[in-house]
Image 1 (cartoon, rainbow, N blue to C red):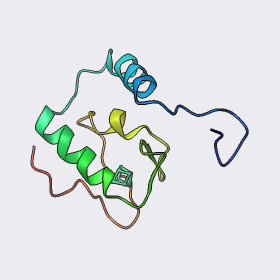
Image 2: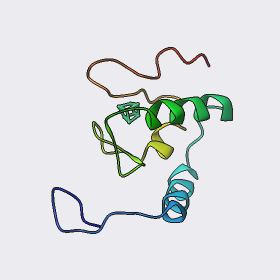
Image 3: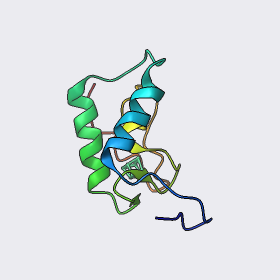
Length: 87
Ligand code: SF4
């Protein structure tokens, strides 16, 4: 599968996403717990801006990565969809 903006391939399998997110999170220390993580991903799954089942249409992040980082917020310009999730 190609990206809408270029001809480069994009990650398509859950296993590839899982491996990439694992590598990206290896050096991160400010992470949310599993409850917050799952709730954030649930909001993403219901979001019309989610592309390819794993990419935020506003920031381009893999949501499985962004949702794990405590210091990140949902970048939806109409409002942070994670705002009501308590930590
Ligand atoms: S806008 Fe927010 S809720 Fe929607 S996909 Fe991006 S991070 Fe997830």
